[in-house]
Amino acid sequence: MRPRRWRLLAAVLGGLAVVAAGVLAGPALLDAADPDALWNIVHGLCVPHQQIGLDPAPCAIVSLGSPRAPGYAVLKDRDGRTQYLLIPTDKITGIEDPQLLRPGSEAYLVQAWAFRALDLARLGHTLPDRDMSLAINSEHGRTQNQLHIHIDCVRRDVRDALARDQASIGPELKPMSEPLAGHVYQAMAIPAPELVRTNLFRRLARTVPEGSMGRETLVVIGATLPSGQPGFDVLVDRADPAAGDVASGEQLQDHDCALGADQTPTG
View 1: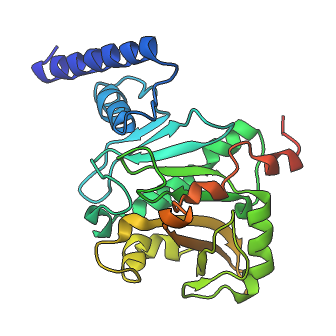
View 2 (view 1 turned 120 degrees about the horizontal axis):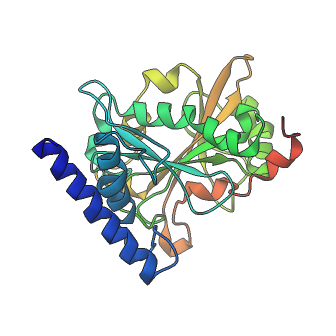
């Protein structure tokens, strides 16, 4: 075995030892008390496994990336029936990290949206895009200091509120006419191709005071635009901890995926 493969194997074994100790010490790998737990799982286990040609467990998928495409891992979250997380393989703290303003960072959202297929596979049937969502919490509404995009079903009441407001959701951020999960979100609608062409992180950063991106949450939900073309509703909220708003866009998701019960499983 080549020296580099020996080093990678040693790293994997070392990571397994750390995880084993965590399992003995607590009930789950993803310990909310450890803000680096996600990073340790991806960097210490999933990526080394992929690099030596093993299954990338405990992740479902690992892409090591290239000069033109950022690397990422996809991990089944311990919470919920269907929820997955997309996590960069580079160290990116969260929505406030300046690295997200660089060209190419939109790929994280594009890939996360594609991997809703993993959620649907666990359901055993498809759902309309309007029932699926991506969410990134603010630094006040998260427990982990590694960017992770929640991929899961949307709450029924959120989907219905968006449907009522859809005709008035335009290309610029404006407050919705009714609160979502008790908070007033701003919303804008974009055609489906814009998710690929537009860096939503950079677009959001232009609308907030410099240095305050950490207070923002970003949610992307499938939509049919008034023109009839497929697109997305993009929702943002700003944390106000004193008012009880930690800007956790994940609250708009349903990790039990009640909307999935409206469909009949296939096969």
